[in-house]
Amino acid sequence: MIKSHKRLVITIIAGLSLTGLFAIFLVLTRPSASSVSDIQPKLHSANPDDKDFFETAYHFADKNIDLSGKRVVAGIIPHHLLAADLIADFFHNLEGQNYDSIILLGPNHFLSGQSDIITSAYDWQTPYGILEHDDDTLHDLLFVSGLDVGVEESVVQGEHAISSEVAFIKKTFPQAKFTPLILKPGVNQQQAVELAETLFKISQDKKILVLVSADFSHYKTSQEAQRDDVRSIAAITNFDFSSIYDIDVDSPPSIYTLLKFSQLNGAGFELLDNSNSALLSGRADLTSTTSYVTGYVVWQDINLLFVGDIMLDRGVKTLIEQKGFEYILDDLVSNNFFADYDLVGANLEGAVTDGGQHYEPAKEFDFAFDPAVVARLSEYGFNFFNLANNHFNDQGQRGIAETKKNLAALGINFSGCPDATISACSLTVIPVKHKKIGLVGLNMAAGKIDSEKVREAISSATAETDWIIVNIHWGEEYDTAANKLQRQMAHELIDSGADVIIGHHPHVVQEVEVYKSKPIFYSLGNFIFDQYFSDFTQEGLAVSLNISKAGVEYTLHPFKAANGQLRLEAD
Image (cartoon, rainbow, N blue to C red; front, side, top):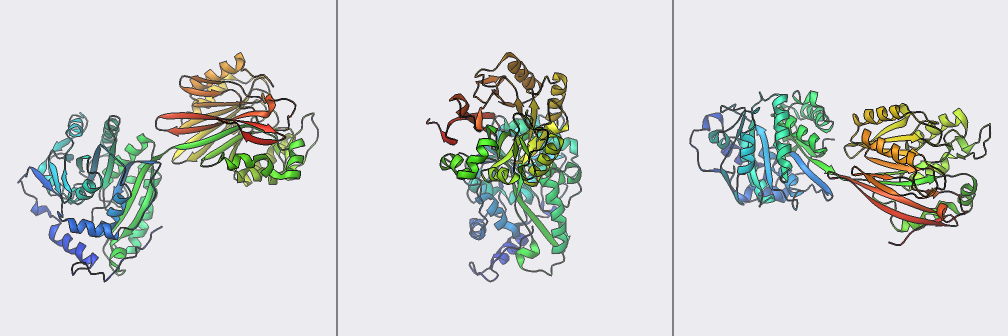
């Protein structure tokens, strides 16, 4: 949403309004094509090289966001200094995040120089000290065979997309080194991809921040600019590479490179701000505006929690009616057991029918749950259930259909087909923090499953997901150790591309194995169940998964049930 920024129109700072101060700097300092000379100083300079200007910009910066727990790998900022406070907002929020090197991409406004991509081997004089160039990064870029990268200092000296940003960079990251990259509009998609891959390779050896200095819509009314920006922001947010060269921005190749670099990092775009010169200057009647977009490309760790079997009929139903869910789960809640997870999942042992009805023919073990009771679980954060088990079809085809309908109505994701079927219903893909988590449900308790179909399903899922977690119903009830078939299938699943295996059905906890650096939890045991006849069936295991750039880390949370009430085991 475009938001008009509140600005003080008549605030006097040393005899000048904020807008007036910015305007004077723009008139006096913005270079033109004719001002670019062949004189090459040994030190480039920030433009403007005036500390008061930047301190004023920071004084008016007022958009604070919390980036803790997020790894910012890239970002977009304007270079039109009427938006200096938007730039200050962007950098102010990054204070405290440390980088070895900052790489700044921007347009070649005057189409100057010989190379397609122009860089510099000079340091920069800024009001906050010398911003040193990065020799190592420069060397890596100059020796990429498929890229036309050249050092052309006279071009860099006159490019305000670079000189307007260096003071902000030095103030925010005083220890970081710096590399500017000026891209001509003729840099095509293939070159942009190669540049992104080179930057990604550089990022494997040091912590870098890739920035794009770009202004967006030009020479239009405020309303037209806002409409253009909606399309541009959507293309960036959705990584719509086919549209990037068509959006209204002064350096599509820079944006394309940034998005490819971000994609390689597995990070997503988060908008910080969007405005234009008419809104910032308080002149809604302007017919020729420049628009601005600021935002971060961030990697956020994903945190998932899985528990074992949940059954809400029979004795559990009676317990809930008499004492409520609070009796069962309050001790866990008091220990923040469900807090701060992006997904909480379990194996749901039964059908979710309208009103919790049971349908003929009756079975010996015949479970059905009222959607209103299942909805209570969502209050604790449950948003995924595995249905691939031997109780999904307890209420026949009608029960299967109602389960899918009722869970969808509750906003709860699910995967798994009836019996031993492997089909489209075996997989659901859940977007979490710009990632796609594939959740596969398989059932070996209903009979032998086709190993080839399993491999095909996992292989197919890898093409559309970032991580694959398999929930599988298998093994022998009440056996505390996994059997040979379980181990064989687990290894096949991981060989086919699965990242995590979560097992259930034995109703008791089984061992954990790490195979090819991938965790296998053979059985998590019961979570909510009325099997009070042994200690083993009243002991369960929860597993929390932290997915980061380094991979998957897990933590085990053992608990016990006493009279149906769950309590965490002491560490």
